[in-house]
Length: 559
Image 1 (tube, rainbow, N blue to C red):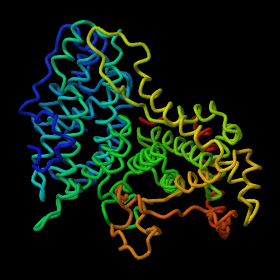
Image 2: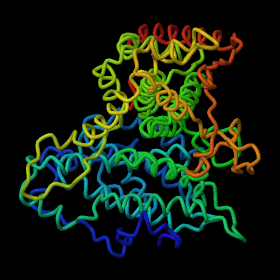
Image 3: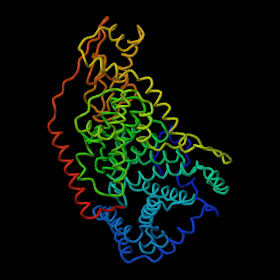
Image 4: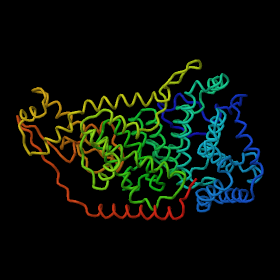
């Protein structure tokens, strides 16, 4: 059962796992379609190589052989899929049970792969697939939460831990998109949804993620006196659960909650404090993308640029070391989205980027950047829609309603809030362009240049100072406004809380001070880093070589 100490604010409305979550009943309308049923019946004849794979996986799980498990999971499973199950489902659990000697742990892990394959291959159709996958995740997480903390009965590699959490949140998003297409639901489907309100509910998803994080000892308050460090399996899954919490909160529009949910994760990776996300590039990309977007949505542009830059630099420098898995497309997509985040943040509040990132932004968004400099609202809208996550609807439609545009209701709401901020910042680029031209300028002259009313410039300058305040997620480089006040202590790399963040000092590339009727400007001069140029050129030529090799082989496909 889930450990005690779960925060009531996040889980008070949730049902208790396993004991109060019944198995989903299958009605006549939500049975699996005939096409999929046929593929499952055909899969009862299992190829010998697939049987061998299943036996090896079961044996490796029992022996806790992480090396073999990772090889079977990352390579052998994909190979079997490409050869036998590219357009059909894997064998059902009842056909696999005898092969793995009815091992409960192996079967529940296999079913997680089985349903993931259905979602990846777009074979999961109908309410039944969503319900059955949800029930399997309930059973799987209950088994994991019931394992011995210091010496678990089985282990799985970090890449599988992340894929498990990531797929859990992805299916949560898919279910809410499916549920809100009310015109496509039959009456029996609507009745089943009303009968099972806990299925893929936000409270249930949050509850399990928090339970896993508590099991791994990565949430505040879990490390009390006499605390024993859990096994690496639980600390790794706990870290990934917090990243999943960040993603869930971003999907629901609760950005402050997502930032605070990160707890003790070291975003920078410069310390030894819970940086398991560096082991899996997909987890690293997801953390930095969703955290950067949360900072963008909460109008903390300096922190947004730092987080997105950190994530992009990691992906650039480790491109050759990233394994080619089914997550490769997601990593590439989040990488492009982080470039879009940099384009928006630097256009709203101009900031300096290193040469490599600036070149990447210009290559992708040169036309939009030109339009955004002239405060073209449509350009901001175009970039924002392309980089934002798929928000889940903010309300549940009633059984008899048919709401048009329900799927993009969350997007339209978030977009409207963002565009309001854009309109409020419309003069910031002009102010920066004038301030960069001088070291001192008269307030009246600057006001006339901008065409503003007399006395309104001070409000705009204070607005810029507010937007460039950096309560950085990095544990170094920040200080408080009051130099006599005690320094806020926190481990390096962790996000600041709200109270500590409010005391953070402005640390942009350009600073200015208004004294009487003069504006004094000082700008940091940074030495050009030649290493970035060589790294960028090496990556560029590496990409050319990869394209040539792929074209000569006729391309390659991955799961």
